[in-house]
Image (cartoon, rainbow, N blue to C red; front, side, top):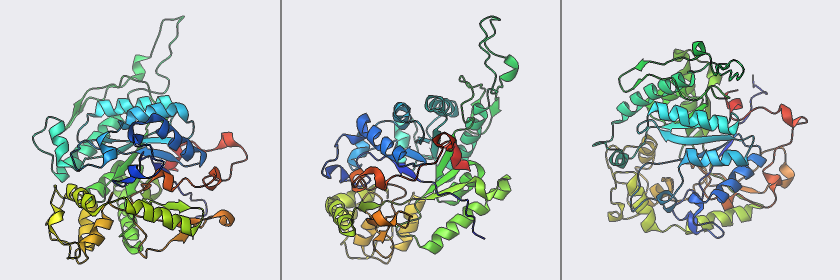
Length: 424
């Protein structure tokens, strides 16, 4: 039977100038959007007005001359989300921090602090960092192997959650008359000794409003799916674009099927597939926006960007209409899957499948219309498979805010908390 009480959870990736490498050229875009707090504020206020569950800021730890412009100069996520907490009151605030290049104590403190500042709206997107160059920015001689990174991430998450349990809810009495600030019996040291970390604790901040800020995880490898089943509350996945419905269902069932070994129910983990819609008041307007975004990207720049994900392989040496070259293994598991899917296709098609190179259509390349209850005002919507990323902020802001709003509850005060409710 269909569960009519299930809710769709929707978040917005705040990509500042958009997902594509040339999206900063789009008319009306603030070229400094990735460091412009007013621009971030505008986006998070739009998302909150639209009743979205969370706003998400991605991050990376390595750049070079072929990085996308918006990656060359951008704000750090937790700092930015802390500032945005002052301009929002309901929406969840999710930021990326790498478990490979961070210490659990610092991460636990950062997100506990964000949870306090936001009144219980913090979320951590746990990643393991895919690019080898990140090691060179963190006094490491080499980037850890894939399995080692996920082994470390699993222990990292356990330590962070242990530190979040440092204090009981009522540990701090702050009684001026008695001079008692806290109850020592309600403070708990962690004393963790593991393969990757040795952390005594306790954390130097009281228990946060959520207790445990929401943990997101992104990764489609076997190790990534196992980590998600073990400890994440939600999974980001790019099961769009070149993926079929059948493949997406297999991914869903695979991840959900792993939960029982960790004593978890299937409903304790959300799977959040990515879409990258291009929206217009009409079908024609959406098509025009799509073509304008795609037209900003040169083949040369796309080839350079594509090479970044294959250890800076030079793709300019191949004719565009020849089959995609056999490059052996590649580091990113999602790209490895796309590599297999496009092995027999032309390089031009492979370029279109690369994140950041071009806006992507659904499998048939057809535009769809809004399927919600507000059919009378639905315009054109072009879905894409961009891993939850909007191709360009201005490509989605069309007309009045009415297109973004959900019906209001009769009692706004009774609305569920966000992102706490994402576990429901």
